[in-house]
Length: 347
Image (cartoon, rainbow, N blue to C red; front, side, top):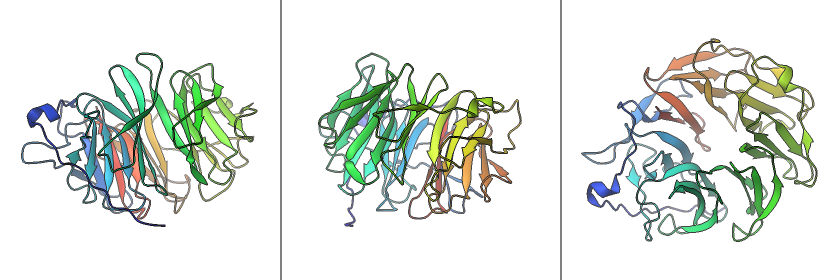
């Protein structure tokens, strides 16, 4: 597989390039751990006058081919790129100035086989699905949500064919493109907003979806027929499910993550068991979750300003506090070096 290098135009139009939507303290932004989450350092240098430390971070994506390149999406302040493993950052500005102004970047995905960057971005009160084939110099709008205030909540690829793209919207639509986003077809319109969608890493015919009304669906034939998964709802505190994650090392192992609990299945979703976690009942809600793709015994979740770690698949946990005044919004593990973990903070 060819390794590509990325180039960004470091364009700053005075302070107009920074219509920042900031948190009230300097403890937001991005933190990086180089030792599996044990210790953390805040990284956010832009220039002598600016840094990321006041930004609310919505998404982080390390480049799967080049460990020096990392992307960070903000709430209201566009997308930033690092070419030195996260030490310093530059706001991305494209030729058509789509990325200029106040826009939020909810999802960042990279087609590593075809050198393509995809974003779900909200601006002008609509959410748009954007594509760049030239390192962000130009972006093309591939899809725009129909309603004002709607969002594209998830982007995923067929793991065997990156021309096969899926997006899930707050309007309840699960849409598929087989031609890198040029055309789309609806797989299913759900009766509630789509919160998360994941494709089975072992079998792309299998897709799981989570809706806002706390339902979980599964198809084994790429969307022709759907099963409503049951059993997890009888577990304690499995309300407000916001994420579903496949174990990329163990077939049929899936995790469901809610604001206050985590459930696990060993049989593809037919039966569920609670994962023992150490978050207090009245503490801040779980906000994000990640599994190490190289060692699925390493699992992480964030709640408030605390980062929880297990090295044995959830049997025991340890906790690290990042900062007291912000919330961990997103977790990203470097796909080449799982010792390196990024977290984005949000007020």
